[in-house]
Amino acid sequence: MATAITECTPSFLAAAGLAVLAICSYLAVVLRRGGVAGAKRYPPAVGTVFHQVYHLRRLHDYYTDLFREHMTFRLLSPGRGQIYTSDPAVVEHILKTNFSNYGKGESNYENTSDLFGDGIFAVDGDKWKQQRKIASYDFSTRALRDFSGGVFNKNAAKLAHIVSDNAAAKQPMDFQALLMKATMDSIFTIAFGLDLNTLSGAAADEGSRFAAAFDDASEFILLRFVNAFWKVARFLNVGAEAALRHRIKVVDEFAYKHIRARADEMSVGKAHDAESKCDLLSRFIQATTSESGEVDYKYLRDIIMNIVIAGKDTTAGALAWFLYMMCKHPEVQEKISEEAREAADAGETASIDDFSQSLTDEALNKMHYLHAALTETLRLYPSVPLDNKECFSDDVLPNGFSVGKGDMVFYAPYAMGRMERLWGEDAQAFRPERWLDEHGVFQPESPFKFTAFQAGPRIWKGVRVQADEGLRGSAAPFLRAGSARQGRQRELQDHDHALHQAGSPSHGCGEMIVLGHIHIQIQ
Ligand code: HEM
Ligand SMILES: *[C@@H]1O[C@H](CO)[C@@H](O)[C@H](O)[C@H]1NC(C)=O
Ligand SMILES: *[C@@H]1O[C@H](CO)[C@@H](O)[C@H](O)[C@H]1NC(C)=O
Image (cartoon, rainbow, N blue to C red; front, side, top):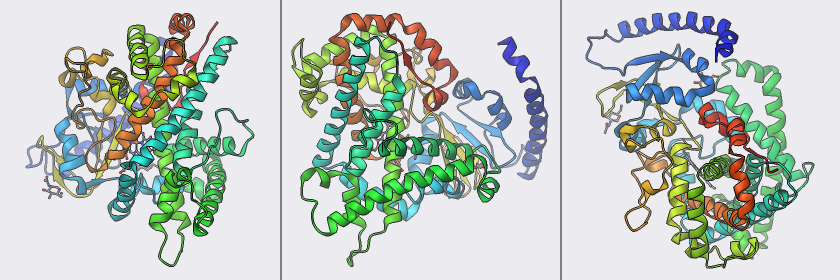
């Protein structure tokens, strides 16, 4: 810790200098707004955006500490106002009660549009409504649910085989990388109706090249949010922006190739088999193609790529944390294995394939304890640890604080999951039982308190089903692979300390999800 501080000294001094500047600008803002005694009340200012830079390695824990003092606060910034909240009433206000006054906004659109385009993730208003309508309809159909459940299950079984082979050969493996591949393959099949096969394919394959370019592009897009000069770099086509342009080209060529092929297939009526009709691309082609048969390829690309963006890292991150929790809590793991054996009725010695076959929808629905353990994982390690909405016109929050037009309101699923005020004294503890009633039946929480899936109109009803199914379908076969090999499972637990070093959650959740790798070493 001492060395960290010494190393940070120049940047700390710079941050301190900037903080003084920020405090001056704060006073200017307060004065401009009619002074502290004015009619409007603003949340307490407890830090500056420069503190965020200083605490970058533990950003979400930094927010958590601040929330212990104030349910809602401000961080001063030279740009737009930044309000942070952990108050379910405020979350409900921005995500539901005054939905139309809070959205993604222009600036977010600008930052992301080269990759996200006009997809559901990036837009508000009518464009959002249209995609939402088609998608919600599709996600609620039985056929799509069966299709996607089957896809997740198949890839999880494939993953379980890889893990079990590596374990038998005492091969160390990068768990998070494997999970990223498995979810990429699943989401891509659901979106495009094609198997990318990054899980067992070679890195030089077209599918793997696409997946790698896609991951890089997502990271470069994220960089734009902290680099105020990205537009200059894009204009000059240098640095990260040049790399981003190259990656997007790879992504787009691949996506357009498959969209064209599918649209052509459908126009000549070849897509008869049930499976090809169940993928989202086919659905959206049907829904967006005009009477004259004109296909809007760019819009289709945006819609489909957004679903890949939305579903892939969220699911992989959640599963990585879930397996990490299982390593740390063998008693929970044991209970889930038991529940899975019972629900699937597959017998003690069933093979991975037989076991995953027996994991029907019905069997998964019986697994309340698994559902609870996954939800508990997302409570403490939400895939989206911090989310924000832009305020479109001056408003007053339920707690009496004012928000100005253009201000950003952040809500914090990670910090909210750790608040004693919301979850009781044991808020920090991993305890799946908190989600179960006395009969062991899963009890959902208010989405404004458990915010890992967002809430309000933009919570995609189907997303809940989708995510649950994806998670449960992916997690369950896996646990079987483990429990059939109890001995090795024990070894896994012994290597908990290795896990600790590789991806310690005390470093903050976001960092772990984006950069970290769970590295399980089996000796
Ligand atoms: C553990 C798994 C998942 C978690 C925790 C999760 C979480 C979230 C969150 C927090 C948002 C709101 C982000 C924002 O726009 O501000 C979101 C939106 C969305 N998610 Fe997921 N998600 C998961 C899985 C999936 C999957 C598997 C899919 C699709 C295959 C999906 C599709 C979407 C879409 C399309 C949206 C945008 C909805 C809208 O703006 O109306 N998600 N998800
Ligand atoms: C977009 O990125 C810029 C920095 O390049 C940042 O100032 C701005 O806040 C970002 N927009 C949003 C909505 O976060
Ligand atoms: C929503 O926001 C608008 C615009 O700022 C405001 O006038 C209105 O009172 C708000 N509505 C609610 C229900 O708070």
